[in-house]
Length: 603
Figure 1 (cartoon, helix red, strand yellow):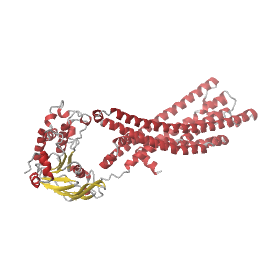
Figure 2 (spheres, one colour; figure 1 turned 90 degrees about the vertical axis):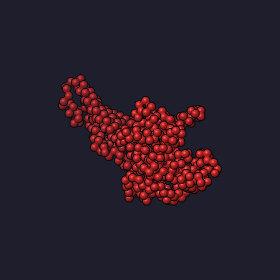
Figure 3 (cartoon, one colour; figure 1 turned 180 degrees about the vertical axis):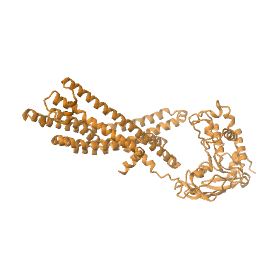
Figure 4 (cartoon, helix red, strand yellow; figure 1 turned 60 degrees about the horizontal axis):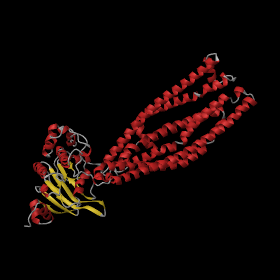
């Protein structure tokens, strides 16, 4: 019950609309209850001889024409009017239902999207992107399904069933009990197949999520696939995933067909019993006992059968099949709740402090980190970086440099030890304030499918055109931007396909510079640049010294030679530190790297 209440709570802003929808359903049902009466009046009192004692019969003959043809035309008009009113009310209720559904869907999707933004990089790296896309795009529809089934199927059908049972018991209790006698069989069938259909629906969701992931990966890696001639292999993998998806759907639909076969047969049995017994008592009352309107007439039986098949069996059918109808929705909602209930891990502490953006001392205090305990990445790192310093972390691949950079904006938290700003543990600072202090230039330059200017201003949307241009000039990007067809208004294609790697990297650097964050973190900032543009970036970094704290990770020692401090890492530890000249004189690990890259002699 808590699960269902939580699911429909996303629609509480539409309580008024839901109530109005229920009123429209009630009115539509009422008009539906009246539709069989014109035909009953026709059989019993227009072409038959039964006296109009029922108040509905009497009301009709009080207003109807005297001629039989006129009465038939009046009955046809009444039947048409009742049906049109029922359809109009149904249309209004459907429009309301659409509004309620999309309103709740928007709220669910927004909350799920916000949660995905809050979750740490560790979660996103452990999950395929296609899974998040599928949960946002398709699983969220499960909330509307649950609302429809619980409110408009279970609630409305239950009320209708109670009212119709009371009406029909007053008409003929024997026929009513015969009609309801199939209920235990329906409940048993629903209970058995409800479990089967929920299981199959969950399987379909999982396989569909895998298909979405396969499609996303195929599109994202199309260049790699074509470069290595793996089109046939990727096609086979895609075809296999599609086949699994189709097989899962076929298994689900097969079970659904068996379920509906049983349900249809059960209702057919009930209808046959009612018709058989009802036909017998009409024969008995009219042809044997001659009871006339005091007994069961053809008109009354037609009303009873219409009520049974439509107004009693309709709600009973909806109630019995609610489990099957809700199965897919429940599976989707469960997958959404899996994400919403996940601990973000990286979040503000209850008493997190605010820090205004300004230069601050950054301290690594016996820092340790691992993704798995048996494989430590950072081991007891300690150092102090003062405002305005330019420092670098260098070392071979896999020594933990990039991991360290991911700890600075709290993409991850250290396992032990601490990172501190002016003595404040980063975990004690509000994440938003912390990240205002830091601007990132990632090794894999990320650009968005929007204009060049908007890409540069992504971290500072209120920046002026002149500020954007100045950042581009400092990053060495202005020269190529001004040659683009629309310069800063040029649209960048998806994944920056119309830019070179070096151009994307310079835009990323300009983006970081424009934020005016006190700390700029650059992961291999010149890896995709030629010597000319590398020199331009190095010159920019020299200009920023003493203005910003700059933290570099680079394999190119020519980029870090001017740093105030260079920290040499090996196996997750800082093994050497000092300026370029000091480290060269130590003739240790840094010297070996410099001798290879900078052609130093052995002296």
